[in-house]
Amino acid sequence: MKYWVGIEGLFARFFAWLRGRMPNERQRLLVITIVAGGLCGLSAVAFHVSCFRLYTLLIDRATAAPGHAWIWLTILTPALGGLIAGLGLQYWVPAAAGSGIPQVKAAYTFRFGAITLKETVGKFVLCALQLGSGASLGLEGPTVQICAGVSSFLARFARFSPVNCRRMASVGMSAGIAAAFNAPIAAVTFTLEELIGSLDQTMLSGVIVAAALAAVVEHSILGSNPIFQVPRLQTYTLAKASSLVWYVLLGLLAAIVSVAFTDSLLWLRAWFKRLNKVPKWVQPGIGGAATGSFAVVAILLLHLNGIAGDPYKTLTQALLGNLPVTAMAVLCVLKLAATVTSYSSGGAGGIFAPALFMGGMLGGAVGYLDVTVFHHPADSIGAFAVVGMGAVFAGIVRAPMTSVLIIFEMTGGYGLILPLMIANMSAFALARHWRHTPVYEALLEQDGIYLDRRHKPHDPGGQSAVPVEEMHAVDVISQPAP
Image (tube, rainbow, N blue to C red):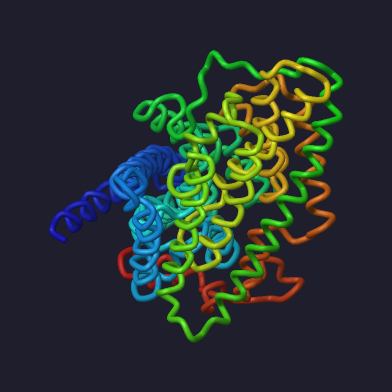
């Protein structure tokens, strides 16, 4: 506590000095945006390192246990992690549950982007614990909420107007995506598509600056691809035009997988909400045990994991074309089931990484059709896996521009522009036709929060009606979680 008081005093002196030098809030906004970009990058690095250390300490050690002990440990470790996270979510910080993207969208819409320090710290701690213990969830969504919390903290400490506090929320989201994927361009488009929805010159410039700075910080500390290792010598191209027929099929299958995932997620989540006989803090443990069971099946049948814990190592093998078609098909189904149970039971973690994993496995499986039927080179399997990642991402998240750019920046697959556009837009259009409401909005509506006031106005906790003068008086330490 003594150290925190010292840090708080340091921030207070800095902001007092800044207000003295820059009485114009617009000028201060640029400075704080730069500070936020750097701090968000550092926060993302700390979160990612914590997750990977816990992967090694918990779930990786469980799956490598000798004899038959690994089976029970692989089931019990995610279950125990889910129980501990459930206790924290129930009695400490309920707002840390879920992906993080819906929470940021709700804060942006109803609370001028306000995300409390308690929510930010809780998201960091509980997500790292649950992911490290083997939950089939991603760290990208939580990174966004953590970074949005950092930028919100700075905005409140700087006593920005509500309009600029909201702008700082977009800065945090952009920095979080950029740091998570080392993809600053995709971070900007995702923030525009998913949060802002319109062009605000001041907001856009802040988003670009923060995304670039966060990516630079992450790149400097963790390397060019902090979480996703694809050999730079690997090139992905459209070798034969006849392969396009399979890319069209991939777009259709990606839409089916996307809708199946979203519908299953919402259905099981609603079922857990009605499960009143089981305490809410126990439910993430049930999801963890189910996830561990799916991981055991994958290891017994395929000698591969990717279901519980870090999915990117197994996904990299698919991108290199090193996995058999049956393995990729089975892993796609198991990952869908494991992610649905992990998330729907009340877990804390995102769906970006699972979406990319399912897409990579689906695409690789379709790539085998291209090789078998048209006798194309086996290298095309990896290309199909890359396109599949973007297609399923587009179908689930409904951010078509981001789904193309993020694949380019992550894999360098610029030779796949045409297949990516065909598969991604097909998956996006079909998924939107079959299920009109995107997954993040559907999750919020399931909780009674409607971002579109024309449908059903909702004021969670009365915070959307906080007067401007009260927003300035919010205590950045003790503000209650939303």
